[in-house]
Image (cartoon, helix red, strand yellow):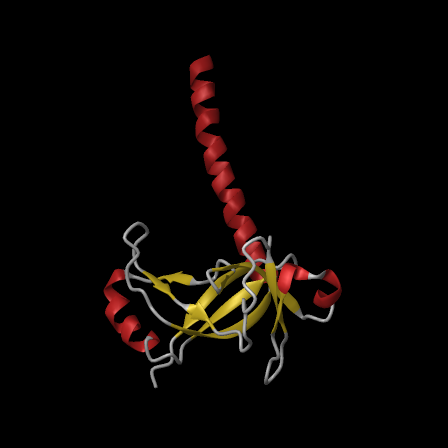
Length: 161
């Protein structure tokens, strides 16, 4: 009987951890501030992970101009409005972040700002159609940004113009 209890516990711990992670992600998506950002570029297949749209996010401001490989993290100050005025903040200075509606934490790597929102999973059967649409450079992503600056892609908005 003791062996059955250990088996049950070893089975329930990973299931509980996955459920907790799922609820945390869902809560973060629902409570974060929403932003819509334009994207460009496309890589249809990630051989390890499957079919992902891989793109660059256009923040409307030059980012990572002063590449510093020793910087721990950088931020994009996000602002709502008809013509949002996002700005790049090197090393996430707290006194500069207080004027933001939200901020997105990331790191400059090889002259590109990476915040973990640069890819979106797509079904394999739709990859060619989505490729043609995203390559036109008019598509967008909808992201949810948490209070601590972590972003999650909520949706891919395709513009078929």
